[in-house]
Length: 364
Figure 1 (tube, one colour):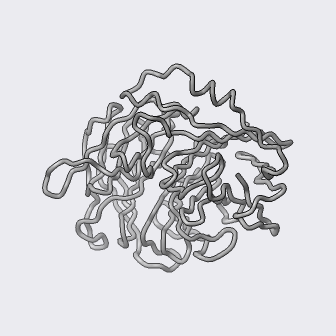
Figure 2 (cartoon, helix red, strand yellow):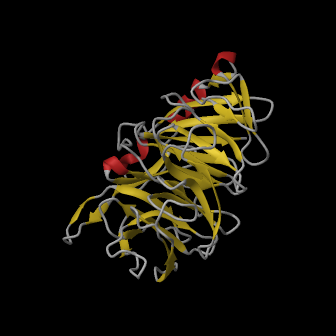
């Protein structure tokens, strides 16, 4: 596990720096390289987590254990990584989207390769799960490929599925309550399918279009279309291949795209372009393939990069703070991180598409 320091003192993320820090309130990070011997693998703690009595769940998936825990203690903070989702029942297969319910504090995760939605608590213990069915174009139902997820204030789970042209609204048991499609207008191509999801503070639902359409759609809490905005293209202020959206505490929207000139773009709610940063280039603060985005309660932006296999952190201003992770399979290392989610200021969840697991990162 490593963090790459910035502010003029960058280190190639493939190496392990002797000492480096992400600091300044909220999620404070101070990591020391493995060679210094300060990373402690608390096997007893991990074993205790595995042996905890399962919580009553929505399905028999609740015996999935926490695989391992690593804790680093430094002068600045105590940092823990929990590697989760690798048990025998309903193991994760190519997981994609993830969110944390503000209502319950549960992690809701798209187990894409297993055609399921999984639910965990903030200690990585499974709370249940259920299969997801996709509505095909011919009206038939099939095993889905859930990709993006969000949970509204009422506890309903919203799912964008790779095989479904609508957003599926599910109750806590996984029963479909409603499906709704993106609105069509002069600027939205006919048949556009839903992609990334987000919820605003007033419970308005935000849905990005898939592909090159470059549109952001808004729906009321009862799923009435409120309008959309966005210009397709690659220049600053334009959108294409949207891979994630997140609501910021400021009320602005943070949008990441796979192939626009600026990977991270911030828009006002009405669609006005505010700023952008994170070019598709080499070096710290740049991107190869931004795959997921989340904004913490204190306004820090976290963006996963599948190709570089790390998570980078920014201030809302665009100032680059640092990065988490290197390629690998140990706690704090990633195999193609596909999405991120935050809870409060101190908890970060990272799913790994190829690693087929997720990691919980927290400071105390």
